[in-house]
Length: 160
Image (cartoon, rainbow, N blue to C red; front, side):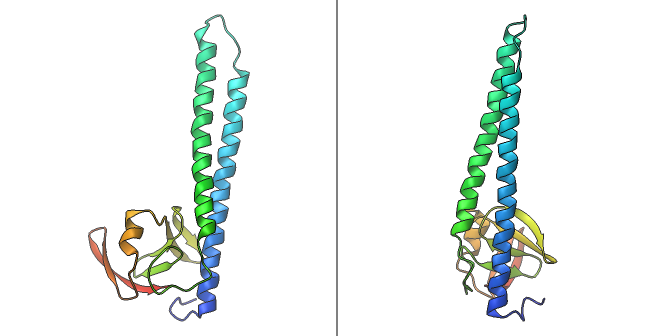
């Protein structure tokens, strides 16, 4: 589908598809972190006391550190999911802002959540958080606007 010939309804549907992709990715990360937390807890619980003494305590401490690390990751992913859920994709924007899709010649940016490069419907889309320097650079720009990215001037072909 040629993005320049898309109707308003098609643009909104595409952004809603992007949002759903983001939800799926973040939920998978949350589930992976939960499984890792459970595994780390099980490993810490299964450490047996040994005659070496400190080995037992070290193993338990390592398990708890690992569990804490995964809990932090899980917490960050839950925050990212909440941010994504708050993004309005049912509107076509004329300026780059949270919820907008910004098409450029070489790449496209969906300003919603920091999920990196994703492939959707034969389109490579960079999911970027509205808090990133790149998003802040894009904010307020319109179709035809220009910005510097990787030391090259980039022209915005479409914003919606």
